[in-house]
Amino acid sequence: MTRVISVVTPAYKPVPDHLRAAYESLQNQTMPPGWTWQWVVQEDGESREVARILPEDARVSVGSGRRAGEPTTRNLCLSRATGELIKVLDADDQLRPGALARDVQVLCEHPDIGWTTARVLDLLPDGSTVSFDKDPDEGYIRCGEVLRHWRQNNYRAQVHPATLCIRRNLVLALGGWMALPASGDTGLLLAANSISPGYFIAETGLLYRKWPGQMTNQTAHTDETERAARMAIIEARAEALSALWKTVDTTAPGHANAHSSVVHWNTYAVPDSGQRGSTAESGRRCPSRARGARRARMARPSRARAQPGKES
Image (cartoon, rainbow, N blue to C red; front, side):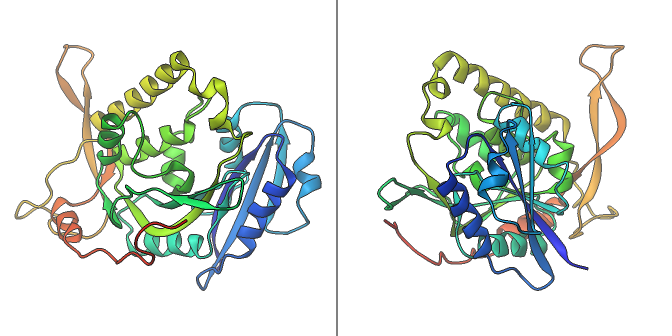
């Protein structure tokens, strides 16, 4: 049976050339044996522009609906996404060749991680590209690392949420993209890293288009009052998830899962309504990785960067 990675794209008044370039970048993907991609494009509005721009392709699912904003529109994509993996692609960006295959490979080889991100090149209006010189090394990103870096660097993560590939069950359990005016992708990234380790792929996975019409270039996006509010709720959600999804030490001798290499579930504590500050076992469970096995994997040497240094 063919396995599917669903690429989800919200589109509001898309520039035809940009959307066609995104489609072409999908056509240029070479998938691993037994895998295919699905592109779910949801128009944020009911103009039907997207359907007129894109060619007929059985792998492309186009929908439209009332104006709801980018995060909510991306969530609506999930209603038609059939893949076990969900990949982000904005309507004005382009995947690099091999990006989907690398996501699939990492998530298949490492069932303990819930998501991946990849290196990004900014695509400038003149066609040139600019790289980010502070990418992390390729490899695992432990739970909570993105939140710590984000806090220490003026709410900027060390990995780009526009490259996120996440397991379907994880994105659904987290409620999808945060229903904010903007930054919903950052909110999901931090939430995912609060309860699941991730993986950074050092090969370039995305061309991130810089142009005057992009959402992050609009005055409203940088309004300090709104930005502070967005960052506050994103941080609060990540902190709440980190506090709820606690792990237990399963490396103790005699533990049923000692040195296990499979994902297991642990109970977490919730406040007891009868006494402030006390806890009671909720009976619900959360997935985590055996610590000993995780430490062993962290010690593995990272794959070398395919393209060392800056690119332009």
